[in-house]
Length: 402
Ligand code: KDG
Ligand code: MG
Image 1 (cartoon, rainbow, N blue to C red):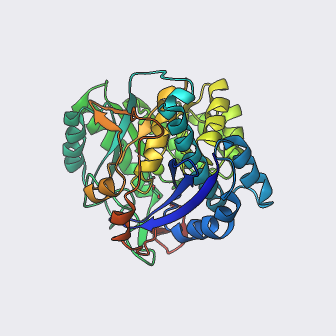
Image 2 (cartoon, rainbow, N blue to C red):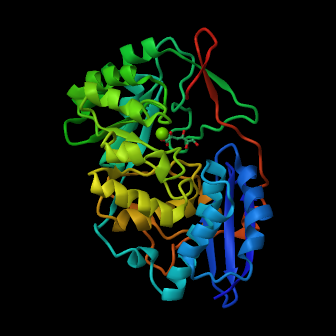
Image 3 (cartoon, protein in one colour):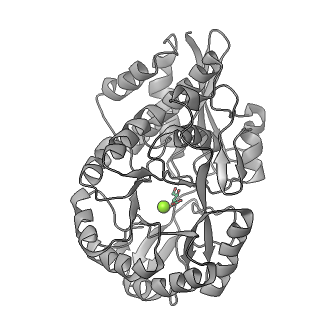
């Protein structure tokens, strides 16, 4: 089963996606997501110029060996561009292996550990009154878990709060737009949001909140403590995590669970967070953390330390990534939650897929492989458009974490 072709497809059906399609000499094809929001063309070039030439003639069945070849062989290890490129190849090879075996990929990963993948949606609005309506909308759709974000009184705009409710898109301009941030205003406001939401929806609904890396560890400890009465499932990215030991400080001050990892590209970004039990959920995902092969390694380590998965699933991760993530989610013992931001109809048409949502759960496709493809003709109708994520400044103009 030799690789005879590998194509990098860049398309923008409403937002940019990069996809790798691998073809074998016996006519099988596999797809892998290679989208790195705001840095798409860097990964496209990495794949086209440096990876694809090494794939031609390679045995498509050798997934682990190919992973090691791309990781160790490049000399330059880790980093989001490299790990996203490796993820695309790895995902495409798992897709091919499933098709060759005549089984959905989750069967090759050990089979089902649950009936469905519990997902959470994003309720966001400028005011608390408005966000209650958004939460109700998710509850009516059957969701068991909802992430809640609101604007902050006194701030003109807040990352994570958008006009378009179901298809939220943060990469909004070719040159980054700018938001202004105030930790003082945010910490004063946020507990009142969750007091209202908990009061309105009762104890059973799982509530989550994303801090988008805005706080220092001690500020995050204060936020977690102030949210304890509202029993959140997690606060996400309370602080940037390059300094893994920084999470110890948050742990000393609050029992609110912590989820972290959507920008992680591999196991070395989180091994201390996991082995010291400094987080409760690890949010790394297939496309940015080296594919199914490497993400499973992270989740296996996490399982030893009672840390659950909570994979990133925003709109900038294509349906190819979502398809792959669901095969892992349904099979691993320590699954926690899966984020699910819906894609637009244009995106769904470019990436026909077999996974479906029902009553708060996503279900992976049952066909051989990952159960997703890219319609290359349709994709070609949507040329790349530069789009970057916003940056964030404090009120005095200091550049801040986002
Ligand atoms: O590309 C960045 C987005 O995917 C991210 O900001 C969304 O924080 C996010 C989330 O949790 O979905
Ligand atoms: Mg997030």
